[in-house]
Amino acid sequence: MAIAEIKVWPVGTNDPSISSYIREAFEIADKNEDIEAVLTPTSTVLEGELPTLLSVARSMHQAPFNRGCARVVTTITIDERYDSPAHMEDMVDSVINSADN
Image 1: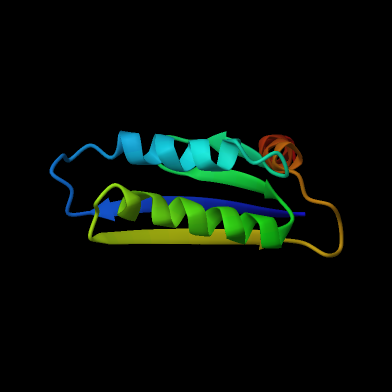
Image 2: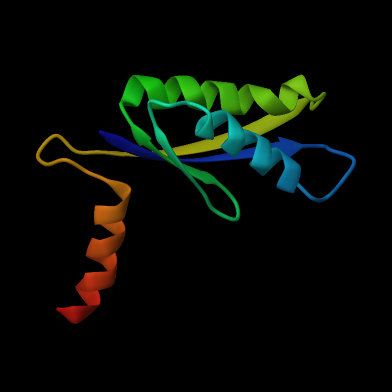
């Protein structure tokens, strides 16, 4: 399993708000049954098999172009482990519980 954070930033829109673009990117990810998607204020976090995540990321990146944007900047951070299974909830729990140590 891999976990990816994806930020899709349209450049040169007529409105300074990009909320609708973030929502659209999330909806693209959320409708894919093979991954889990979590919305954050500025990005979408995905969990699933890496080939699926990359395919979804490509669709998310393409979405603003489909709405007429001439330029899109997308950043992707991928966290993938081979030594143990990784799940978003476990990683968050680990961070929260690390304060106890």
